[in-house]
Length: 461
Image (tube, rainbow, N blue to C red; front, side, top):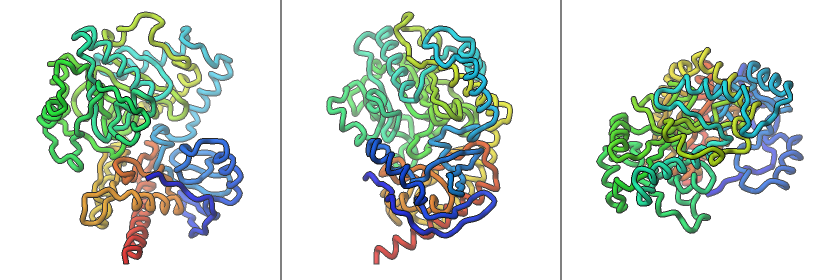
C-alpha cells in the first residue's frame, strides 16, 4: 500500500544532542511553500519520503535551513559512501568544471581513461573492461543485453532465458523491472517477456530452503532447461531486506553457470564500494561474477554507474552499437575518482566492517526485545529490520512506516520502508559514521519501536 506524509506541521519533542537537533514543528512550516511546489509540479510517484527539505549534508548528517539536523541512515539511498559533502569530492568537481569540459559523449577524455583504469585496477580478474553509464537501471539493462548476446553466440536463439530472484529489485526501466522479483512493479508491463523467470532467493527467512538444490528444482518446475539459460542475475544482497545468500549456495551457482555456459551477474549497485565491509560485496562469497553492475556509491554524489566484465563478453558489440549519451561524464568521473580514493585510502570498507559489527549487535538486541522486529539481515553498514505482526510471519508495513516516521521526528533520517510488504526498515548510513553515532541512532530506533508498539496495542483494544 502506498503511503504518504501529510503536509500538516506537527509539534514534536525538542531534540538537542551533539549529533541531532529538532527545534521546529515537522514538517517545518516555512518549508511548506517548497513542498507544495514540488507536489504541484512533480508526479505523485515522487512523494513518500519524510518531508525534510535538505539544505546541506556533511559526513553522516543532514541539515535543513531552519536549524534542524538529522543523523542520516539513508546515504541519500545508499549513495554517500564516502560521506556527504566531502571536501575532496567538492574540489574535484569544481576543478573539472573550471576546465570547461562538461560533456564529451563517447569522444575520448583523459579523465574517463583514468577512471576506467582505476576501476579495473581494483577489480579482480576477469572484470577488466569497464563501460560507464548513468544509473543502476542502465547497467542492468546492459547486463541483460550482454547475457542474451552471449547466449546467442554460444547456444543459438533458444539460449535467451534470464534467471533472477523473487523479491529482487534491479531498477525502474523495462528490462530491469522484468528481471526484478516484485510482481506489483510489473503490472504496467502487461506483456511480460517469457524469457525472464524468477526463482526463490535463499534468504533463510521468507525462503527457508537455502540449498542449491532449490535453485535447480525451481528451474525444473518453471520448465526451464539449463542449456537455455543465458544469464543468472542477482543482487549481491537483496535490496529490499539486506539479505545475503549462503556462501555454499553462491559457490554452487558459480559452478552451475560455468557448467551451462551461462553468465553470472552480480548487481552491486547497492553493495559496491565498501558498503558491506569489503570493497565488493561478492567478495563475501569467494566468487567473481562474469559481469558486475555498479552505481550509487561510486561517486558519493553525482549520477554515474558502470558495468565491469570479462573482456570477451564486454567486446561482443561492435563500435558505436553500445553507447550512452552521458557515458563517463567528465564531472561525474572527477567525483568518482575522488570518492574512490577516499574509500580506499581511509579504508572505509574496514570502518563499515568494524562499526557495522556494533550496528548489527545492537539491532539483534533490539529485535530480542520487540516481537515486531521479526528479522535482522545485512552485513557491514547495511541492515534491514523486517517488521512482522507479533507471533506471525507476516510483514507489517504499517508498523514499519510508523517506526520510520517516529525516527524522522526524533532526528534520525531513513527513507521509507522497503521490501516485501513495505515492511523493512532499511539502514544504510555513510561509511564514515562513528560508533558514537551508531549507538545514539539505535537508541532512537529503540524509542521509536517502543512507541509504535504501544500505539499498536492501543489500536488493538
